[in-house]
Amino acid sequence: MKHLIIILILMYAACISAIAQTSEADSTAKRHDELMQIIMTKPKVPIKTIGIYVYDGYNTLDAIGPYQVLSELMSVNIFFVAKNNGFVKNQRGLELKVDKSIAEVEQLDILIIPGGAKETFFQTQDQEVLDWIRKIDQKSVYTASVCTGAWILGATGLLEGKDVSANWYRASEIMDMYGAKYQPERFVRDGKYWTSAGVTAGMDMALGMINELMGDKYTKAALLDLEYDPKPIYPDGNATKTEPIVKEMLMQMYDIDLKPLIDAEKNKKEESAQKKKKQESWPELDDYHAVMAQTFHPAEEGNLKPLYANAEQLAAKASILKKSVVPAKYQKLGVKESVEALEKESVALAKMVKKKKSEDELKKAIFALHDRFHEVMEKCHH
Image 1 (tube, one colour):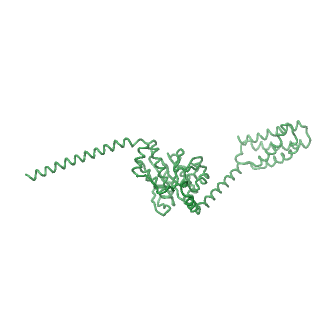
Image 2 (tube, helix red, strand yellow):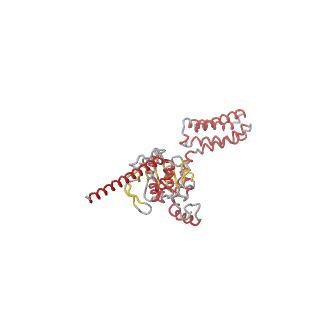
Image 3 (cartoon, helix red, strand yellow):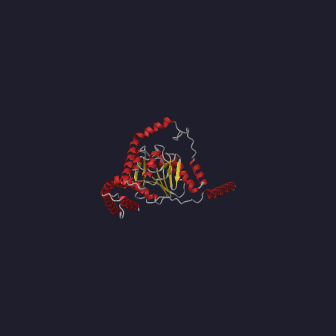
């Protein structure tokens, strides 16, 4: 009997303890739910998919940093994508298994492009990759780059006219090639485009995205969950703060592999621009215009001496213009016919001068010829 009483007492104590623990657990869960109601606000824009594009030679933290930070967003599918699925190696040869290829990924809410070095530059030449980025950008909420990943994003043309951040190395020079304006900030947002400075700055950019989407309390919770409170032992992680000798050493190191590639790309772009300019220009028309201006404007004021001197030259320039190839830009309705009429009337004016026609007749002829020239110009630019 005595043993039974002891057993009953122990069972009663255990029940009381279990009830107390259950009550405490319920209370904790309830408080957690209450706090989550405060912190877990509705996202400004729903984000369901985040893809981080990786390639052989990518910088590890450029990709893994934003991956870790953006994983703080709940109910989001975040994954790596490469040109081909399989293994991709970072700068140090560490392999990352990638299950999705660009052919399999047709839509992303957020696309992030990490940087690297020489291999990153090679990505700027891969039209298949650039076309895929442009395609994803059509529907993405945010399109972003980390470090030299801005080179790849810039090569798509999507950053033209945008303020951007990037790795400090020749940043203004390189981003200018892509029509973007470099800002020496930790990260920059211009519309839907987010770009960060080098490596670790990608984490700050990712936190900026969380703050934009979820607000300050959620972001602060993410910061604490990550225990992200960096305190570098020196302030030299910024190109504007480090010692000149340190910056010069790194610049020289990067230049060994990258400067020849950058210079070649700049030359290619300059040659392309010159070629385009040449294709869009019509030097024969410009030459005729120059002689016309020297002849017509004095005639307006009653001075026909330049007309007597330039009539043969006008006729010759008009004949050259008629025989020239019309640039594609100016191959418009009626241009060819107007140029033929201009040549015919220029030759006729030269004959009038040679035959010593009256000043009144010559004035009428040069005024009519000037009108014909403007007809050509209007049709070219219509």
